[in-house]
Image (cartoon, rainbow, N blue to C red; front, side, top):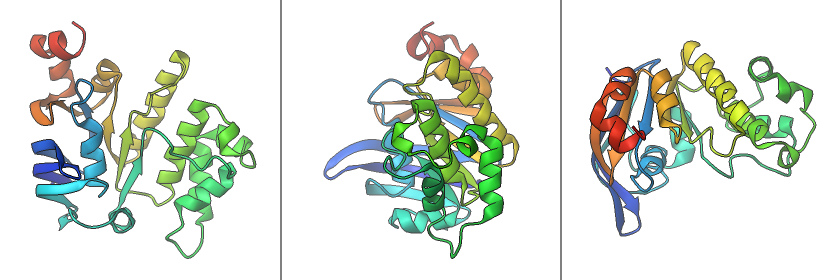
Length: 234
């Protein structure tokens, strides 16, 4: 059984429909990437799964439970972590305070999870008292991912994790995501660097104008001449 099962999803914002009949699955421990042109609805898929859009039809199930129609604060308790593309840290709070916010639904902050985040992102340990807003873009992205991992989610959703990063940091960011997945966390990612994302993932979806256009293994999509020509720059 799929960990995440999106079936015939129609969604948008208010009366504006963006997604039409989108189907998508993520198995336990799988690494799945969504690519496509600007305006295709990639981020809307992520927001819809996390309860941040207007649900217009279809079904979203996570771990066998239907989650469409419930609020984000309930969805996070099901085992989904979400890192949006922007505004994904609390800039006036320290690194440690941001991590503590990631565990706000728990009675106390698990020290073991703090240690695991610091082990995965050593720069955060070094800067645990620094305000997040004074950190570099790459460091803030690591902090946002670390905060999402504080609840030990079954699936981590990442929206454009390499956006705005210096070129020499992009490969490092992808390496960290690989490690998170290798440790057993399923990953669903939207990524502008489509070739690199498809090279690393298990499966990929190509979205065009709010609809599924292609779905296959990452390597197969990279090798598909039509996909390369239309969506990957040849």
